[in-house]
Length: 416
Image (cartoon, rainbow, N blue to C red; front, side, top):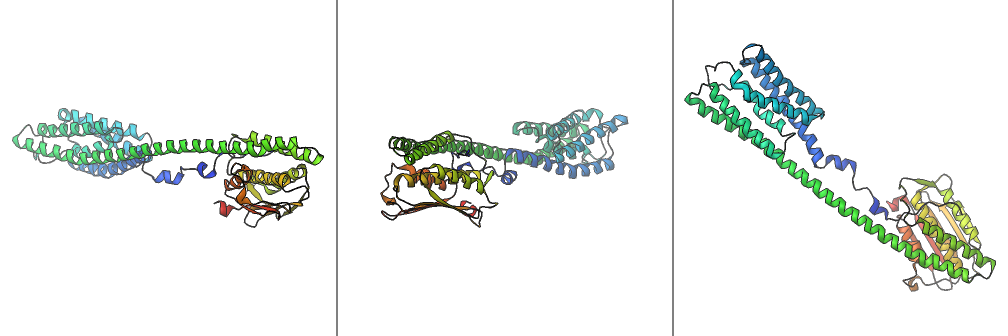
């Protein structure tokens, strides 16, 4: 007998892919949120960073000497570098953390490098406009607690700097408190929103992991059950049947049938638990027909084989395999139960829809399908359920004394 493909041991619906790539790109999860956060911070930083840069040029850098140019260059340089890295997601967490650290250090040394206080103490220094931007960038590498701590410390430091800049005059205390409060409120809104969406994304990841774990357990349980049913069907309707046939083999034809049934049982047992075939793999309908011709020739009773529409057609490997084993089981059943005087036929047709239709018929003693015992798995499991497992359909037409017709149909439309 020609080599056969391994039969799948799991239902195709269970083995379908649950992680659709487009859905994954759209859904809210931690990875997608972090990418969205990086690019959002980059856009916010660019808009307000340019505004602050123009404000700085209008006010002056407020730091005397060459150090002032270095000071401004480092602050704005790291900020725009972080904007570029966040937008293109190039080590954006590191770049954001560097700018947040540079801004913190800039606030820390501001009182010692700042020029004398301006005449109008109500005029905010340019560094104030970077407070919210720095908090937004700090949210990228820091978790919620770290971002809150950064916000509170930088806001407090800025308020203290406002008081120091104004030489501790009475009005500066109120101005410093108001500016620090305003920076805390605006920055706090950013921190809260980022923290909230991070929690939601984390919950989605947790729920998805739990769902995948449940799915995996269901797949394993289903595979175990399917494999158990498959082994039961093989033992009941192939192994035991082949042993009984061998015991009753008194003629050359009965001996050929016993040999055929033993080979079928061995190949089916070898296929149990074999690796799944890829559902995208295909095989030619002509190859399936050749395998069925060989099986019909070896079965011990003549089958009139007719073929139509097979040229150039292909089938999924798992479908061809299921149709083959179901057809062989139907032929074995016919030889075993239809009687020695029955005329038998096997017709195989490639359909216009890209499917296949196989008919096993005989004019033997027939039977009543409704009277088949539940423990007889040859018809129910080995034929009907095997074909249904790949999206096909089996029709059984049989009456006592009027022969039997078993029709196996599979088409891509019905299977889908």
